Length: 587
Image 1 (tube, rainbow, N blue to C red):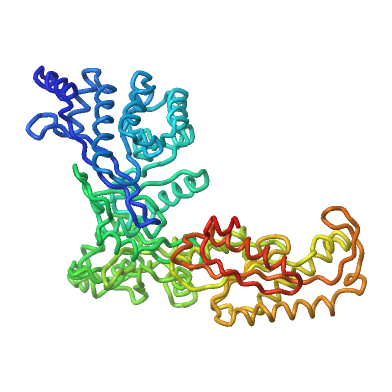
Image 2 (cartoon, rainbow, N blue to C red):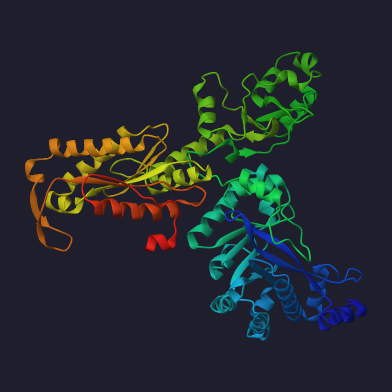
């Protein structure tokens, strides 16, 4: 490194001539700025203006930890001086992360001076080099977390930031690498990787941040997939004095792209669409034949106009069959390829239901299953949905539903129920959730055996299924004698009362007299007398503006169930609570 740059770096560190810039990280769920990542810049007229120049110089001079500490101090001061909301994300390399000289006490000293709570600071571990000293990293991570700091892993999926470092550190945040974000709206593979990361993070309690979002399409896709935290040039560029609030355009974009749960009720062609290069309609047929013969993997090619309109699909088998006839080249080679579009071409919208697409390609006996579906978005070519991928996704979804069905009633279990509720909340729909529970079922089961109990459960499931509108309502069996019905029918109360009446009639007409009046032990082991089984139904009317997930609805529903059972036999109780207010629920 030139001597003048070495001296300049030393001067910048000693005299604090570096300055931080901040890039906001937004929370899609809360419609607000969740925090800011602090980045460092050198003087514009120096050879160390960019962070890569600064840190390369510091690395070569053995000044990395000292530079990072200086950057940390400057970022904290600017963050507090500007009274920025949310959390402060500070970048750290493994060297600084594990260096006890700059770890123990110095950061806390800065924060105490600035009166900045450690719980508002996130240390972001970032490095493109191998991070293989897992014990050291894990110890440092635990040290920071015990002091109240949060820890994030940067660039997950890039370089060496893989699954092992994630599992070893169990950080509070993981940041998805830009590679998986760039062009995600055109790549089904990238969407599956992001879903995989989201699923793991949700299961182990980590938060996911998608960084490097540069286009409206990337933002829209990630928001609709349920990524809560997002960062990138599309949202805001790093600046020395960032805004404290979301811009109006980002607020509108969030409102238009509520999360779509990955469920059987909302699967669309978007899930399987892959962007494929298209051919111009005026390209000669001979040129396309040459392309097909050069690449045996091409089963079909989309034809798209210069304006971006999808016109149809060229089938490999159909076109090559045409050119296999004698004199075919002489007759057809110079014709435009648009004349050879397959009559079996299907063009569907990006948000078309996946099951509808599957029926179109399988129920028509004349449909060529080797001709993939052209997908458009707002009239413009968006990509290709391969028939194989459509059928595989539908099959996998049916298997998934079967795994989550109750084995006794065959009704959907918890997972499909939660997905249904989340979908309605995303749509800001108006709905009622009813929890149906059989009173004194355990003593009945203990007295007369599981077979008798199972018969009652099956009968209740059939009653509920027969009493709802299958076009609007959903019946789930969440375990034992507990059923949950999600009503969109306006006459939901009448339907609930009908269930109570029919259940009572079933009990009186079907069970033996000794099952309607009997003695057995109660839950406390005391022998007592029990009468006929009855049903309690507790209902809630969630406010979709205040309830964002099924977890919050479940809190309301548990309270409504207990209140319905406390009222006694054959009751429909509607809770007045529409939001999960902790104080109200605790009362």
